[in-house]
Amino acid sequence: MSHMGLPSTTRSSRIDFLRGVAICLVLLLHYSLIYNLVDSPLSRIFPAKWLQLAVQNGNYGVTIFFVISGFLITSNNLVRYKRLGDVRLRQFYALRFSRIIPPLILALIVIVGLGVLGVPSFGNSDGGHDLPPSFFVVAVLSVLTFWHNVLMQAVGYFNYCLNIYWSLSVEEVFYLTFPLACVLLKRNRYILGLCVCAMVAGPIYRGLHRDDELYFMYGYAACFDAIAFGCLTALCCREFDIGPSASRLIWAAAGAGLAAGYFAGIEGHEVLGFSWVALCSAGLLVDALDALDAPDEKRGLGPARVVCWFGKHSYVLYLFHIIVLAAMRDLVPKGALPYAYKLPYFALFLLLSALFAGAISRYFAEPLNARLRWYLTA
Image 1 (cartoon, rainbow, N blue to C red):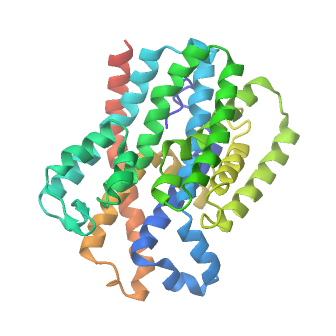
Image 2 (image 1 turned 30 degrees about the vertical axis):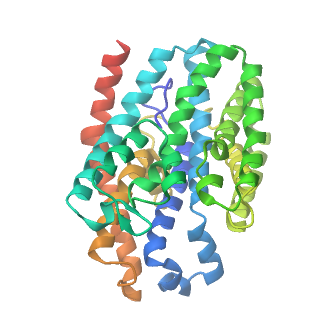
């Protein structure tokens, strides 16, 4: 996400770091689903049980993304319009379109092109049976019109690369409906009430569908509560002066709670686990925009700075890392990678994903975003 409404030369390193952690959890999950990092040299460093929990709960990383999205969209609109009810719909949608759609279309072109050419990990299948290339029309339309998660609930996991784009459907429906709700409800307290309704509805929906991950993880109602936690946090930060001492206590408790919730896992906690992770992620965002970094400030050193870089480029990384991983999977199939090569191959995956994301961001997504923002909002 971009910091809409905030100066373009400033960023919150805390938000970038949290977003970087989230994308790293997703990358870890997707790589390990193929090459099983639990059965790698990492098991000599970390206990196998904890390593298993670390790699298998990466979908909580998406929950963190949802919280950040709700927080930033609400915060930035409060900065820009002062009141959420005064949001200008045309401007809001134009800014979201220019940021999100161009790199997504590029990713879809790559996936569909390779799928039509018959590259194995890019094709569509239904229960092991290949689907005709024409099914890409339905698949791509579902991504671009924000019901890909619904298509997956009907068809199942049908495309290795496209499957992860279910989360975009959740976010885009939020972007479509949130400003409309703000205009209709007008007052912040009514919007706050809507957030509370979403936070209550989420666990109820997941409880009704706890036996099917296509529903309890990917459904709109299953995810909107995480976004609502972010929105609610932004509204509370606007209304209340929490103070630095209280903020530090909240951050410490939220950080400990997030780690505990993550390692408790998704299995057995399908109903409230996502709510807990969302609540703790929201706690880490309290007053996150109060101290923005100067343009030339070095935001940390070493690993922390790398994580912040991953957070800054998390959207493009999310779109394209799966393309990199699909190509690597076709080159070295699941089960064929020797034990000693799993970590080097993981490092190569991270490096290639970062290189692609950095290049696409710098030479395609960011320039086109700037041009479209100027053109669409002029």
